[in-house]
Length: 394
Ligand SMILES: [Zn+2]
Ligand SMILES: [Zn+2]
Image (cartoon, rainbow, N blue to C red; front, side, top):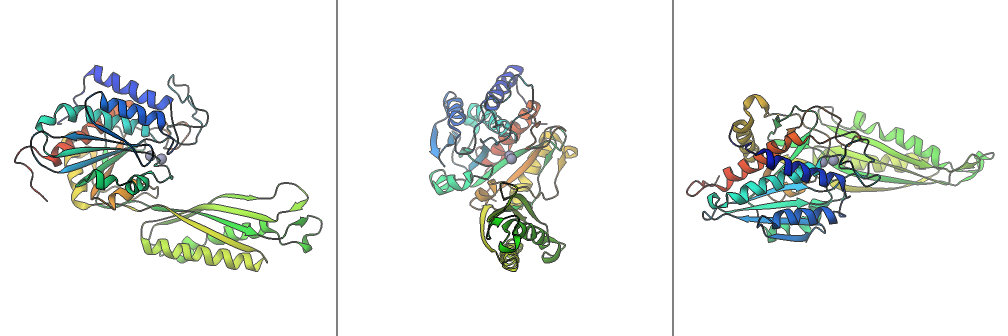
């Protein structure tokens, strides 16, 4: 064990900070109060802050005082989800229908906790540490917005790191491996135009709803019949709307859903099959389909060197027995992937003890995990920034 050294008073402070974030959740790009609180927490310990990168994003920079070295980026996400929290916690969400159901309140707190330790140790640090508080991770493109705003031109990083809490892993267990980690995600909408009419005269209509049902069934053959069984892929139709009453055959219908893959060629061919099936099935019913497919997330790929660095730090912190160096890929998506396309680095999972899953209305972040995540950030940053004379570029 190396770090994990937090006083009871510091842990109480961090827990109350996390619970404050939790009580006041905000959706992606709307993190006004949240980013204000993040900026205040950094400013009050002497870390200069730049706001407004990617709309509500916040950057803090810790300048090491021990000489030149690497620039290490540490990233946390800030947004909540449009889910109504089901809990009786005293600090439960005060915003109806909005909830930190992915633990980003905890991620911010762990990065602030790390910043408090790193700022206190800056006399030992070479180079600089860039604290990246990112908006809108949950499908609204916060990472891409920060990158488009010049994140890495204005705050160059040699390496970047991020974590996610994992309710399916025991408290303090860490998982990090090289290569692909999580899937790309496309969101799609298919608008079907038919010719509505009286339900008593179906022969005079083109039923857009019936065409939508056939298309939805057809799309679910893509994974089973067009994707190589050894590749990982998901296609889910998740929303279907058509019609509004009992005696009218719908004029239009809409299908929405997601495609998730681990490889660009699979992603491309699934999109092509989706368009071909939607077009041809709609045509078979006398309807017309218009397809919109949007690239929302990239595949997250850990650089092998940086994944190994995180794993070695974790081994020192929690022991090899609590470390999974070859976790299975997951078909969820994470927009830190786009930052990793700009700067090499690694993303790791941190067990927070068994409980309700991420995005479940009963999900609860476990404050006991704060020292683990904070210590991982601290130790990775200290290891990579280097102390005087220790920086070997690799
Ligand atoms: Zn999430
Ligand atoms: Zn998340």
